[in-house]
Length: 160
Image 1 (tube, helix red, strand yellow):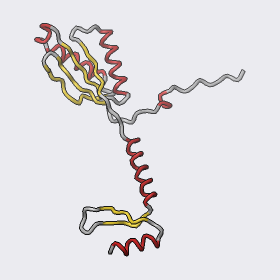
Image 2: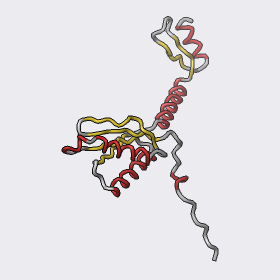
Image 3: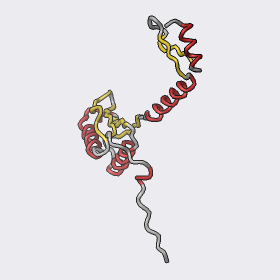
Image 4: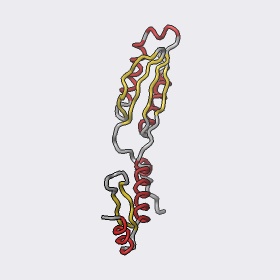
């Protein structure tokens, strides 16, 4: 339809003539309430931002000669990171002649992956990069419990 006719129809309906596809031949326009359309677009954008998740990569560094207590503490922390939905990069740092024994690093990485298997899975298999051996763990796709669900139920109050 011609532009003057479309403008006349839009004025009759007390709406706006909005250009939808200006590069099409012929250009496509629609009669609508522009402010309402703009509001709905803002709401859609806001909703999509709310649904998006930020996944950051945390890093935990180990040494081949790590003590049992330190290993347990670091591995427990990795479990917390995975539980929060973060990816975790596990790095084994070799010093001196330790680099000639990569099997020690593999053993540690296998133990870490085994202990956090319930919370995450290996996304990038262990590989040796110079003096470091790295592996990436990703969280499982299960739904995260909300803050209220994580709390244990309160004990009943005694009516004394």
